[in-house]
Image 1: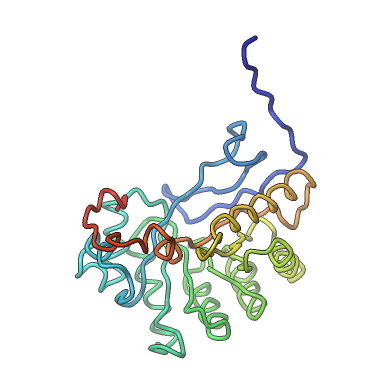
Image 2: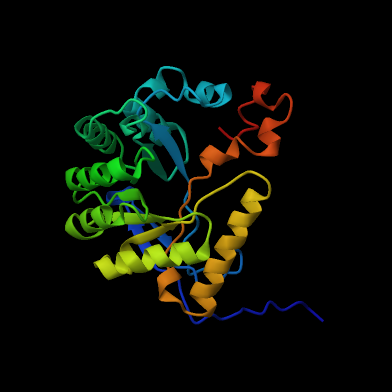
Length: 274
């Protein structure tokens, strides 16, 4: 008897979310089944590359060599390089110089960097803060204002600053808002609900469910994503029907394979897909 694939029908569907503007705008979401089991109606996963607004001193040498020493010193040049030389579908700009415990760069300077990077490339832009919730709330609010109409993703709102980012990003200036949680389905759902109660449309929210590499970190992240998708699709839970975007780049270099003896000395850039 020939094999016949049986399609599992779900009552729920993941929201579609458009990032960016123009010809290179991308749409994520739209899934109506678990990964690899879709009927073709959903959009393929989008992959972006991260750039920093300062020199990445703690990055592995092999990554810096892939871009070039001079390129990573200038976020505008870095963004142009990615668009012209890679298949990245969007750019993730991290404004880590704003960190009060680091360089404590001014909000005005950081916003200017975001504006210059956006103007230098036609790829959709995801703008992240410094990791300091208090300052990032003010910073991403100003970024949303300066880039009004550009349909950027503010990455990310957390419980401590979701009000300022949600009001500015998802409501006043028409941006997309990423809701960050700590690899926990209940925390992810709670923040989504808080944002929608604030007035942010569910179609303007993207979930950042977090990432981890220690122990069984990646497996735990994947299983959390599965639980979220099962609830969104199987239970038609609208508070979990947002597309997922998470930053795995920082964690990738902490996994066992990257820490193995000799791994960091490997200069074969093709092996690292860079």
